[in-house]
Structures are given as structure tokens and as C-alpha cells.
Amino acid sequence: MNASGDLQLALPAPDRFFAHHGVVNARPRAGAARVLVVEDSSSIGTAVAAALEHVGHIALHVVDGRDLETTLTQFAPDLVVLDLMLPGRDGIELLAVVKSSSDAGVLLLTARDGVADRVNGLQAGADDYLVKPFDMQELIARAAAVLRRLGRTPSTIRSGDILVDSESGAATRNGQDLQLTSTEWRLLIYLAQQRGRTVSKTQILTQVWGYDNYDPNVVEVHVSALRKKLENHGPRVIDTVRGIGYVLQS
Image 1 (cartoon, rainbow, N blue to C red):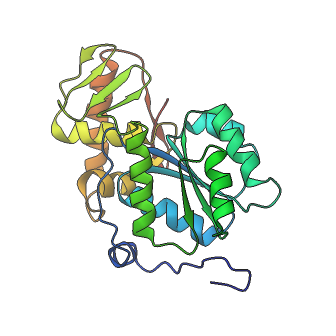
Image 2 (cartoon, rainbow, N blue to C red):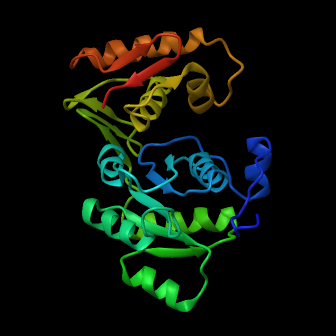
């Protein structure tokens, strides 16, 4: 904790960090939640977003509430982890923005531990409240509890006219079965979760295959095969970003 009272988290190698904090790895899955982290402390926000992604969610960290309405529209989060003590805009005001602009759940973070502060936050519409400094495992558990209460852990993920079901293993486009291999199915889930965001071949290897020390040409082969199957039932949606990787257009 620094002089201003902010929680400071040193980030060692990811696997050691998350193991130390009790966060168990899970590859992204169909139905993973989209979580927006609004936290002005770069160290806390980065650590929270990384921990959420480590358990299979899609997380976006922003350092303030500027353009929050636009971010809510574009990212469409299922859950917002919101620091109450942000510079510029009052946290309760931002909570009202979230509630009026989206149907996302809200988990408040704050250094204020008074009963009145907690009551004010909950009465303003927050779904839960966590006081700094906090244990990362508790944050993950509280986030999961809010998502469960709101019914935001579906078995399907949709991107435009593409639908993937984690329970049946089915994947369709415009209602037509894509007949994917297991690897193509996992690849489609990952790209759909990251829709609109460019992902590198290394990221794909890590998330789909579970390691990054493999020939990246393997990614090209599977992306090409998946792209062809998708284009049998609609226009191209997987674009190549030269020198970087791929993006599934939302």
C-alpha cells in the first residue's frame, strides 16, 4: 500500500501470481462474462483484469469514467467492477450511469469501510461491495456470485449471426451447422469472445492450445479452415491484421 492508501500489487510471472492468490486457470469458454474494470490505480486495475481473464472471462480495464457511456455500449459488459473513488467523476454518479445505460451488474471497490458507505453504494444500485485491500480470490468469488445471481453465465456465446453452444458442442451460422472439429470449435469460441479485438498468434496458441511454444503456422492452418466453413454460410468475418494476428468482426 502506498502513501495515498492505494493497494499496490507486484506482478510476478502470471502462473506464480495467480497460484499464490488462489486463482485457478481456466481457458476462455462459451458463455464467459465480459467484465469492465474501472479503476484509476494502474496496478490494481491491471491485476484485477488479469485475474478475471485467468479464470476465463473477458476483461477490459479503463482508468477513469470518461466516455463511460460509449464504453458500456461498445464493450457491452455483463459486470462492471467500479472503484468509487475515481478522479473527476463521483463513483456514485458513475454507478448511476452504469445502471441507466446498461443491464450490467456492479461490484464496487473502495477504501471506505464504513457501514454508511456500504449502505449508500448498495442503495444506489450496486450488487456487491468490496473494501480495499482485498484478496484476489475473494474478488473472483464475489464477481462470480453477482454473475450467477444475474443469470449471466449462459452456455452460449453469440457474435452476429454466429452462435456457439458449450453444452451441446454445436456451432452455427445463420442457423446452419458449421460441422467444426474440436480445435476449430475452441478457436471460434476464443475469437468470438474477443470479437472486434485483434489477437496475436501467440495469444491464440496460449488460449486454444494451452501453450505458446509451437509453430504459429498451425494457427494459420486452423484459421483458414475455420474461415472457409464460416464463409460457406455468409460473408467473411475473420480478418487478417498483417504482422499482428486476426480479428473476428462483430
